[in-house]
Amino acid sequence: MTVVVTGASGHLGMNLVRALVADKRPVRALVHVNHKTLEGLGAETVQGNVSDIESLTRAFAGADVVYHLAGVISLLKSDWSQVEKVNVFGTLM
Image (tube, rainbow, N blue to C red; front, side, top):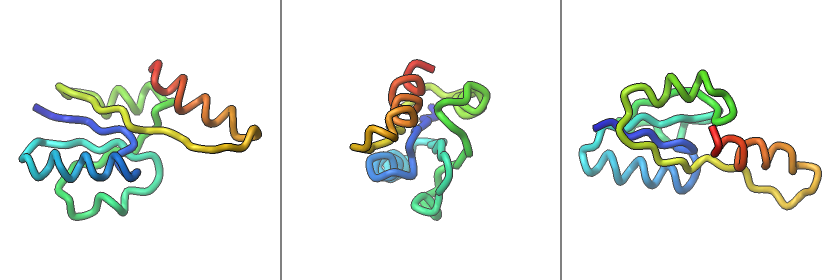
């Protein structure tokens, strides 16, 4: 049963990936930019973006479970469009 984790290179995602791998679950980690935190864990990494349906289709292919942990955090009003794109519309995808 393949498990996909979005936001896998973030704090929550990385810890979930570690726990799933320790539980011998096959994990596919969706990473946007940086995957260094996942190196050596034994998870498959897939480059993608929660705002891009094509990359989600590739990442989710054959998956039984998806944990959606991707998100953008900012308190700046000027960052709202990016926060909304990832946290709202990325979740709707």
